[in-house]
Amino acid sequence: MQQPRVSALLRNQKHSEILLIKRIKDGRTYWVFPGGGVESNESLRQAIVREVFEETSLEISNQEAIFSVVNRGRKEHFFLVNVPFFTPKLSRQSPEFEAQNCSNRYELTWVKLNDLGQLKLVPVESQIIVNSLVTEARI
Image 1: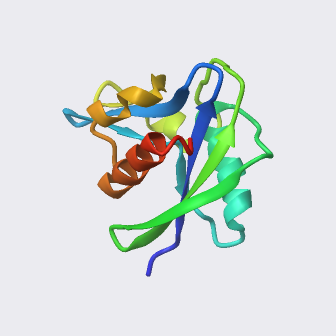
Image 2: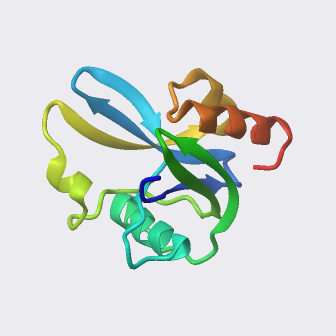
Image 3: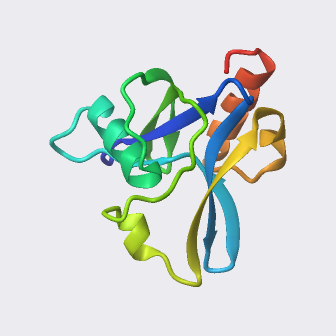
């Protein structure tokens, strides 16, 4: 199995919103959670802290592991992080910042929890689980 991945459900409970990244890549549009690959010298918690900072410029410390899925042969670990409202932006040191161009964009967007079911969220397994968590009022 490949190196694991981590993803963050950054939730603003006051506004019932979650932060997603709208990906526009080679003519396709889809939505993902902030996150990425775990480096060989990192724990899952270290990786989620690094990835969230790279992709949102937010420093976190209150992450809670909530579920895992297998996505394309990789185990992906999801963490719930309660955050105040903030204006997210890609860190200038992130690989995503460097990779942006007219056919490869990262748009950080606050989305209402009730609207998650209308988005093309990937991996698909995460969308099913997140929709269930919203329905059960667990997030």
